[in-house]
Amino acid sequence: MNRGLYIGATSLLTNQRRLDVLANNLANINTAGYKRDISLTESFPEKLLAKLSKTPELRNIPRTNEIQFEEVQGGLYRARTLDGFFILETPLGRSYVKEIEFVVDDEGYLKTSYKNLEDENKTDYENYIINNNGDRLQGEGDLINTLQGAVYYPPAYVIGTMSGGVRFQKLFIDFSPGSLIDTGGKLDLAIKGNGFFKIQGEDGEILYTRNGSFAITDGYLSDLDGRRVLGLNGEILLDGEEIDILPNGEVRVDGEIIDVLDIVDIDNKEFLRKRGDNLFYVVENGNVEEVPFQGEVLQGYLESSNMNPLSGMVEMVNLLREFEANQRVIRMQDEMLERAANEIGRV
Image (tube, rainbow, N blue to C red):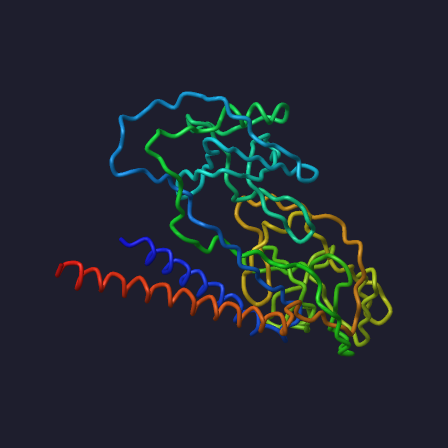
């Protein structure tokens, strides 16, 4: 298959996914407590390109090659090699690169990373650096020699690398807070600071939300779909006339303290996934750590969506322009193939 057509097609598919995510963000601008999604894309693995006329294959004999190595910032390293390639283990196969940035993860493996909104290096679902035998590199001591011994020197007929295009990797949730809206509602609550309300889902599943638009269902504090809001003592029964919720989360009915809202912060939010209805759940086998809530609860307020409509529209225009550019690339490749079939064949 023509590589230009394939690369253009993967770019179109990726931009379509990104446009769908952006459209969903814009549709939820007025949803209380909504957290926007950020699209993460990556290129397909870099594959080796070889000449058609291959010379007899040479063994991968180590050569003298000084790699360039530096610590970009605390815990993040960058390495370059002029001769040979570093090898990455990816879900789609091996990738050969000349330059790489990596961290040493909690298990001691050398791994690529990404930065979350707190500027922390995260390695979940990232790629391992491996040696020529396919073994994952590990160690925190002499990283230069560890990388030096893992450089792959290809046969003489290999002339470089090429990527097959780009792909949509995953969604990243932006948990930054939205602005506060004064509603005056007794059961409208907003969290000032980092934290989540805990909601009891089906079969006792614990769900998390920043949407504090609550109601009373069968006498209990619940979300607008009837799911019970949890306090430190379980479900919160509101049997009275005057309901007050204090900044520390205490729930008072007719002046009497009946419970405290169970509000927690999540230390590693990358294991949270959207369930729908503005709820989050913990991914299977996710190592989520709940930490004490340090903020305040504001009664009579709601947190707005953290999606900025102006930046969203600018991003949409850019995506449409990229989409049109990839369409032109595919059209140009198609015209070249048509001319090759009709004119070169005639010669």
